[in-house]
Amino acid sequence: MADCALAGQGTFLLNEQQGVPAMLSPQVQIQLNAFQTIYKQSILYPAFKERLRKSKSTEIYSIGGNSLLRGEDVKGLMPWKKDDWQKISDIQKDRIKETLRHILPELKKGGIITHGNGPEAGAVLDRWLGRFLDGNKDQEFINQKLAQGVKETQEWIGADIKEALMSLGISENQIEVVMTDVRVDAADEGFTNPKKPIGLARFKTVNGKEEPIPRVLVASPKPKSIVQIDKIEKAIRAKKIVICVGGGGIAVDMNNQARSLPAVIDKDLATACLAESLFKSRYSAEQKPLSRVIISTDVKRVYLDYGRSTQRPISNITADRLQQYIDSGEFAGTEGSMLPKLQAAISIIKSGAAKEVIITNPENLAKIDKGGLHTRIERSPKNSFDDIAIQGLDEKKTPRQNIALSQVPISAYPQQAGGLEFQLIIAQAI
Image (tube, rainbow, N blue to C red; front, side, top):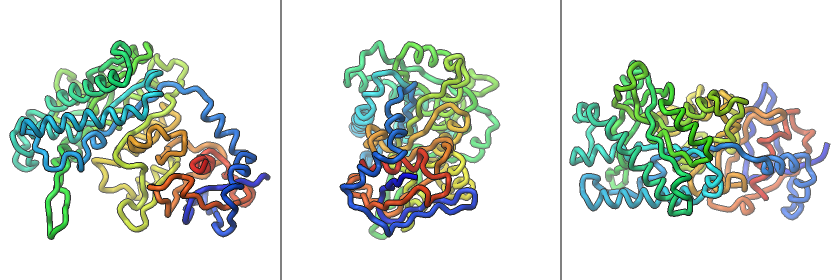
């Protein structure tokens, strides 16, 4: 078989599949100027070009609340103070516009935007209360006001997204904001075991070091279905940019949807519910999946051993392998942040609702098909490794600066080698 090159720097970590270790020798290196020639002559290059050539169906962009109000942006701000509230509002407008600018070319063809509201929902309650929420003392207030707060953030962020799109040249009649209710089970364990953090990031100084102050945790039940699914579907058919499922949607009792519940539904799980509902609906009578679901957050990639000396990014992974990591406890402690994103990705892929899920930060949204830093989750393609993580990558450098090359015959790998995931790592180098 033809030779090919695999790009990256440092130690390559290729997981075992079916008990056979995927092996890569970093010793045999070739010159950089030979890389593109070898790659373009390999069996991988036509598949990559074909992937970019294919037309795309509808995409969903899920924008994280934490990427709109980042900790460093709002440090020291008090939402109940008029001037501080205006600063918070201005910061969010700027972050929204920055995020949308990265995906504008794709959005012009239509698409769906969902968004989180964790920081914003807490900030709204802080403003109403006149001080920062205290999870121990303010539970009754939270129970009374949280649903109303979620509704306000849906209106607030939805209007800001629409305004930003219009400022970027999208006509008003091409945009539709759908206020969204999401049915949940009132007996969901999320109501008795709150795990969703809300409110602005806050910090305190301990022994001369800045440490985060834990945020208030609220109920976050699993979404069951989207109340306004028909309205969303109609807007998609009209090729509009649809802003919906804001803040995960307003939680309503599945047995009495006139009754709202004090909860913040995870927006990524709600986005998965939306994708699966569209896939099963008449909108997708031919069972054609969405092109992709893109989850925008405040980190470039998903990481293994996050925050440790052994931390390494996941570039590409199958839903099955990702589930194995979750089951092993790899993402324990991230129930209010990364874990729901991964669970949503797995649900979307396994349901067939989308071909792939991308997780990255706003700065890398426009680079997804150009070698940018991100994590891609998909079904296990035929003839591929289960997943590949690169250790030692300097993410502040360009892909070309990071390259250290090894020339390895495909025949030296297990038969699974040579598929999509293998090829995508190579694409980062060109």
